[in-house]
Every structure is written in C-alpha cells, then in structure tokens.
Length: 290
Image 1 (tube, rainbow, N blue to C red):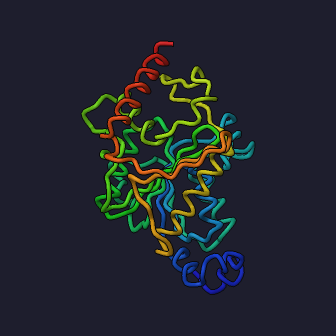
Image 2: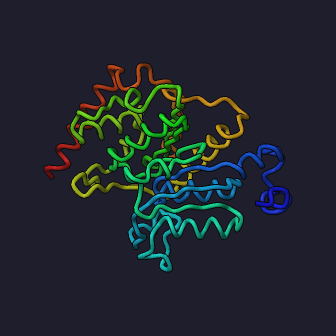
C-alpha cells in the first residue's frame, strides 16, 4: 500500500480534520464488519471514504428488491448477489489498494477467530433480531482485546454504544445472559439500545413482525448511524479524543429533534431498565400472537 500517494490524492481532503499521521493510522488499520446490509453496508462505505485500509466483511445474505430503500449496496444490478462481495467491490472501487477479506458464509464457530484476526474494532451491522450471533461475537471480541461498536437505526434516529475490552461487558450493559429465552434477551437488548425510546411515539408497532424477524427501517437512520460509528472508529484507532464506552451512550432522534448523552447506571441491572425490558417483552409476545 502506497500510503504517501493515498494521503496526497484519494484522501487529501481528510487532512486538516485528520492529521497525516492519523490518516496513516487509519490506512494501516483493520476493522471487522459483521453484516453488510442497511447499517453495515453504509458503515463500510463511510469508513472506506475515511481511508480505513483493511476490512474483514461477513454476511451470508444476498441483496433483493426489499433492501433498496435503505441498503446502500442494493440496486437492480446487485440483486441476488452476496452482500459482502458487493461491498468488497465497492471498497476496491474507492481505494484499489485496500485489503478486503470476505466471509460469505457469515461468522461461524469455525471462522470467528480468523474473522476478528488483527482487527482494531468490531463493527456491528447485524440485523436487530440476530441477538444470539451478536452476543457471541461481542464476547469473542472482548476476549481478544478488541473494541466493539454498535449503532442501531431506530425510527429516524440512531444510538451509539461502544464496548471497551476493559470496560462494562455486553451482558452487563444489556442485562442479558445465555440462560434466558431468546425473546427476553431480545427485549433487554432493545431496552439497552434505546434507553430513551423516542421513536416509539411514531412507530406503527403492528409492522414489527417477530415471527418473520422484520421491522421498519429508513435510510436517514442508517446514514446517521454510519456517521456516529465512523467517528467513533476514528477516535478508537487514532486515540485523538476520549472514547466514552458503555454505560455511556448517545441517542439521537431527528424526527423529534432529541439528543441525549446518557449514562446507564448499572446497565441492564438498572431497575428502570428491567421494567422497560418487561414491557417490551410483553409487546413482543403480543406481536408473535398477532
């Protein structure tokens, strides 16, 4: 990789907000991105344009027409193609010198160690409903000393949660564990993602299909999520600014003009969070019966 030429040409407009040294750090760093759809695909493209030089991308899914409203790799020309492979091509079109490894089978027990590899950051782009897989990958990243960042698109907004390898862990923050039923863990995960559920006031809950693992999502929320996540990745890799890991969180809702920089005391063990989890769990059960 010709670092000097890339800084002088492709990524020259980053300089001034990033130093040459910080840009070099980004070009030499690897991120592991699980999920290349709605948020994951845009995370990847935003990081590629920031000059991240190395990517591991995992996604077993293919693009289809229903993806085009919010997944930035989805187009008529990519329908039926593997999402990880499409995004890898898009990265190489931005920066032909980038190093990209795809995991078209997704993340499995067999390839998890390879997928995380020498990554500096785990980027979470997994579908909301894939809780069990997400939990396993976050736990594995922590064991390898890797930061993990999740930015969930919620309504017309997003949240930011960063997990430091030496800070509060995934289960403590969300109040989840391997012995609880999937639906209860998913409810706790939802409560932890959105301590202030601004989007609930305008969300048509009848469009959330638990049995089909589908729910509403729009492109502006994905672009906002990518902005939050990419900025956090820059801070982690360059050390340029303090990183506020969980139980700190940021939540933004552009529809309601709300911004909250919060601290979730006790994480999922917070009494109010437990109450929220129970309420969401009951809504999930009602949705499954509908």
